[in-house]
Length: 62
Image (cartoon, rainbow, N blue to C red; front, side, top):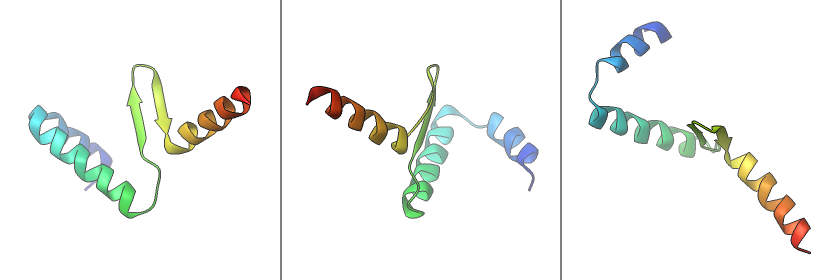
């Protein structure tokens, strides 16, 4: 199955089914030890981004 096939299939699913798939994808990231990536209207965000920002905030607070 190609990415194009997946995109076509996903576009036909209900919102509830898409949420189930999103949960599955998040579990895959966790199982693989990869940081989860979030994507919204602000852009993408990973656990590495979160850690880097927390470090900068901590440094500024000291």
